[in-house]
Amino acid sequence: MTEVAKSESSAVSKYSHLKNELLRCINEMLTIEAIRGCPCEELREKIEKNTFNLVVVGQFKRGKTSLINALLGADILPVAVVPLTSIVTIMTYGDALRVRVYFNDGRITEIKPESLPEYVTEKGNPKNIKDVSEVVITYPSPYLKDGVRLIDTPGVGSIYQHNTDVAYQYLPKSDAAMFLLSVDQPMSKAELDFLRDVKEYSNKIFFLLNKADYFNEKELQESIEFSRDVLKEAMGTDVRIFPISARLALEGKVLGDRDMLKKSRLPEFSEVLNRFLMEEKGRVLILSVANNLLRLLSQSRFELELEIKSLSTPIDELQKKISVFETKKQEALLEKRDFDILLDGEIKRFTVDVLDADITKFRKELIAQEQAHLEEEFARSKSLSSRELKTELEQMIIEHVRQAFNIWRAMEDDKLAKAFEAICRRFVVKIDDAVDALLSFSSDLFEIPYEAIKTEALWSAKSRFYYKFKEQPGGIEIVASSLMLALPKFIGNKIILKKMQDYLIRAIDLQLGRAGNDFEERIQKSKLDFRWEMLQRIEATIEGISTAIEKGMNKRSRGEKEVEERKQVLLEMSQKLNETGNKLMYIKKQAEI
Ligand SMILES: Nc1nc2c(ncn2[C@@H]2O[C@H](COP(=O)(O)OP(=O)(O)O)[C@@H](O)[C@H]2O)c(=O)[nH]1
Ligand SMILES: [Mg+2]
Image (cartoon, rainbow, N blue to C red; front, side, top):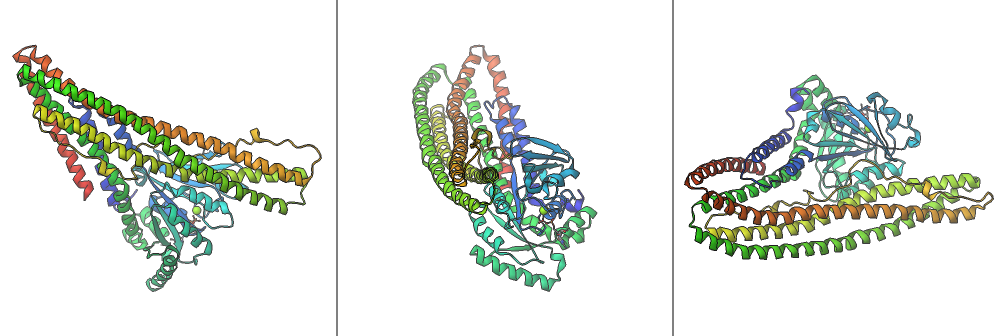
C-alpha cells in the first residue's frame, strides 16, 4: 500500500494504536505476581477478534466491487463480472491472497483467484448449480488488519428475489452498510423498496453516489440534489450523500497520486466512516476492556495493601477482623447461590418468551407464504409430466426454505444476542455490586482504601461479549434425502400437489427443529460461560482477601527479616501496578476524545 492510501484512515489508525497499547498492558499485567485470575487471554481475544462488518449494497453496475477495490487500494476483485444471484463475497484479513468457496452443504474448497468467475458468474455457474453459498477472500491489506471485513453483495432489486434476500441476511450483523448509487443511473423502484426495509435492519447506512468523475461540479451538484430528494422521501429524513469516484480512488492509490485520490473524494467518506466505526464500536471495546483491566488492578492493589497490613497489624487484632470477615463471606456465598437461581430462571423465561414465540410465528408465516408459492408454481407447470412436476416443486421448496431460513436465522441470531445481552447487563451490575460490597466491607474492616470501578456503563448493546453467535459463513443444509418422497408409478397431478404440501410442512418443521435446537444449545452455552465468569468473580474476591491475609500471617511466623523483604517486594509490585494503571487511564482518556 502506498503512503497516500495509508494516510486516509486516521480514526482507524488511532484505534489500532490504542488496541496495541492495550495488548501491551495485558502482557505487562501477566507478569505482575499480585494480579491473580486475570481473564487476560479472554480480553486479548476480544480485542483481536473484534470485527467491523461493512456491507456494500446497491444495484448491479453501481460500482460496489470497484469501491471495495478502492478501499483496499488494490485491484483484487474482478470488476464488471456479472455476479450470481445468491453469492456474497467476503474480504477479510489474511497473510496471503487466498480464495475459499463455501458450499451450501458445508464443503469448503480453496481455488485460484483467477478461477473466481467459475463460481460467481452466471456463465461459470449458471443458476448456481454448483450450490455455492459464499466466497471468502483473505488479503494482507492494512485496511483489513484491524478487523474490517468488507462484504460485497449481489445487487439488490434485480429480477431475482434472492439477490435482495441475500443482502438482507447480512444487514443485521453489519456495523455499517454502504448503499451505492451512481450518477449515470436513475434510482429504481426496486432500490427504493429495498431501502425502506434496510432502515429496519441496518445499524447505519451511508449513501454514496459513485462515478462522480463522469460529471463536472455543477452537474454533480444537481445529481446529488436529485438523489437527496428521492432518498429523503424514502427514508423519511434528510440524508447525507457522499459523491465519490471509485475509479479515481483506486487509480490514485495504486499510482500513489495524492491529487487524484483527493479528486475521488473517497478520503472524505473514509474519514467519516472510520470515525463512525471507531465511535460506535472501537471505542466501546477499548473502554470496556480498559475498564475491566482497571477494575482488576484496583482489586489487586487492595489485596496487596491488605497483605502489607497483615504484615504489621497486631496478631490478635488481625484475628478478630478475620472472624468478622468470615461471617461476611458466608453471606456472600449465599448471595451467590441466589444469583445462580435467578439467572437460570431468566434464561428459561427468555427461551420461551422470545425464541419459542418467534419460532411459532415464523412457522406460520412461512407455511402460508410457501403454500401460496407452491400453488402458483403448480398452476404454471401443469403441462409437465408427474415426475417432472414433482422434481420441479421439490427443488423449489428446498431452495425457498433454505433462503427463508438463512435470513430468519441471521435476524433471530441478532435478536437473541440483544435480548441475551440485556439479561447479562443486569447481572453484571448485580455481581459488580456484590463484589464491591465485599471489598468495601473489607476496606472498612482493615482500614485500607478501595476504589470501586464501575464497568456497567460500557455495556452497550453492540459489545456482544457473551452471546455465542453462529459462526459465519455457511448456509443451511437441507437434508433432502431424509425427506425424499416416493411416488407410485401412476399418479395424478392433484395428488402431487397434496403430497408436496405435506412435504413443504415437513421440510419446514425439520429445519425449525434443527434451528431451534441450535439456538437453544447456543443460549445454554452462552449462559454457562457467563455464569461461570460471574460467579467466579465473587469467589475470586473472597479468595483474594483470604489469601492476602494468610500470606501476611505466614511470613510473620518466619521472622522479621522475611517480613521486611516481603514488604520491599510488595512495594515494588505496587509501583508496577500504578504504572500499568496510569497507562490504562491514558488509553481510556484517548479513547474518550
Ligand atoms: N467512470 C467510472 N466508472 C466506474 C466507477 N466505478 C465503477 N465503474 C465502472 O462501472 C462498472 C461496474 O462496476 P462494478 O464495480 O463491477 O459494479 P457492481 O456491479 O456494483 O459491483 C465497471 O465497468 C466499472 O469499471 C467510477 O467511479 N467511475
Ligand atoms: Mg460486483
